Amino acid sequence: MHAFKKCETVSDAQVYFVASLPSIGREKAEAILESYQTPLNALINADDWGKSVDGLGPVITNKVKEVLSTPYNKTCTAT
Image (spheres, helix red, strand yellow):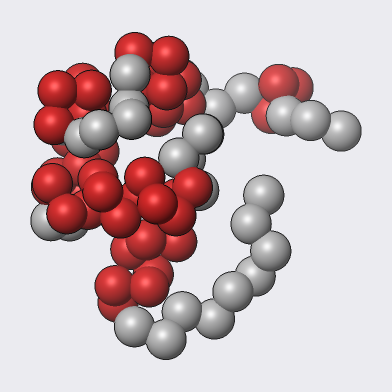
């Protein structure tokens, strides 16, 4: 989980949002946003990240897709 962070700009908020995905972090989030321009475009095109963003291979993209597409199940959350 991210600690609460005040985002000064929309760009900061976008990086913060994308960086919260599994194994992404700030540097990869910025690369994703540079390639896809918006978080929504990035999420829609997560299947193509490995082709258009350096450092993102199938392990990371598959984990992100799993998190984005798996229905929420409260019993699966960490305690």
